[in-house]
Length: 637
Image (cartoon, rainbow, N blue to C red; front, side, top):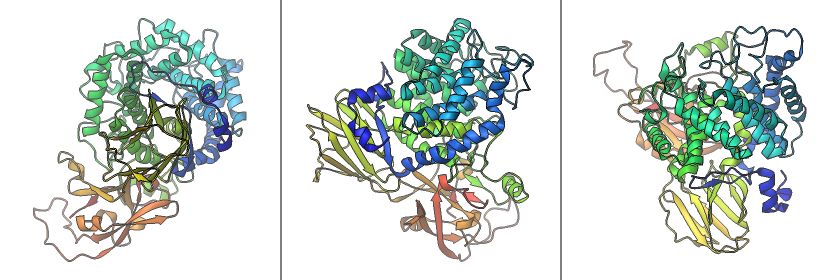
């Protein structure tokens, strides 16, 4: 939306246009009247509209996702295209992203949006059921026969979220009517029994309650959370813990099983808490969150260390080269983190949100917006099979699409809605949760934020419309930040951070200006001694960004033979390269090692080392050139 148009809108018009998410038990409320206006996140959103969305639409057409719907209008439908029964969700996630684009005045995806919405209206069954896989009369499986793997309620969840977005952002209730018919069928059928093997519908049903005011959807969401772990789901292929179904949710000792399922379930449970105030749910959520952050998240914020079942793994089971860290899991963790922030006002959840956003999520998309990672390791060895496959004419490192294409359209929808996570409010205050060049409007205040974050730590907040009474401007102090300085209208600010927040309360006037500065030195992070896979190594970070070294930036030696020490890190330089900030670190080449896989300890004596400057790039930018080795964790000896 053009800045001039945005500024001309009244707060009432903002609320009417952008909607508002109600919560009854939360400490803070999200601000829907925000727009990202510049900087890295704005560049990402522009790329989403100009490259990723057109690419996604093209691939959805080629993969047959639309044909799977349109064939149901034929008397003798052609076979379903694809291996999975949940491919309709790729359309729904894309529609959710398009609702934001169209709501902001970008008409380019209109034709696709109208085509899909029209198809959904026409193929929906009379009773409200909608799934192009199971609606085929010739399908081997019938509706509701396989709740563990059918993903039918998972499909409904993404349909609801697309429908709510279209209604809020565009004022278009066609999808909402479709979603309500399907949701009402589910409430009738599953009111007293049953659940889905893949959580997601829980979040969506709470959102549908918020949009319609119909409490039956909230009740059903709570029932689905409560039924998990009570023996009502027939398990196959994987045991109950894969589905988070081996014990009731409130008794889970740790995050477990399939990473996306786990985080979606937790986010849904958090939504139920936000509307019911059920403290038993919150206590479980807080315990699970703290355990995850302490022992199961990669330094990038990625979740999931096992490829075989896309699962989370044991505590401290975080091998960098085997990191699965699915892109969808990154989005799911951010969804959970945001809801925990709404519940508590706690900045620690935003610290995790930010870490995931700039690392585990951002790495899933190529620089040009047209290729993707599904899994996101923190190390690639020189002889990795994907590299040899690319050299032999196989798949490149990043891929244009997948047979199970859940991640690309998930990136599309999340990228489109990033402005929803910039700010929050409570009575008498607005909180800036995530830093980006943006404009924020609530009923009480309008703010303009200018910053080049995350590349530097300077932030300027200007009051464009001031409250009539004293009002609080609450600014997050990131967990990585130290020696933060602040000034109001050029005068150093006397207010001390309150934990992880800097609270400024006064009578503001239009034109008042707050300046913040977060110093961004290069940091080195070690790992917990129980994390065997990274013992004897460090990773580099600056601000919220984790860095890595690619082989093409290490002419001195193989990345596996690079060694950096504390003095090297302290003397690291910061340079601008293309559109990113990179690090220049004086690294050494390790001496030759024994050819034996398990030599007798200690190894050969230390030898003089060759040293040279080495470039470290933001982790989210790796894999955009020729395939090669990469490391986040670098040796210290």
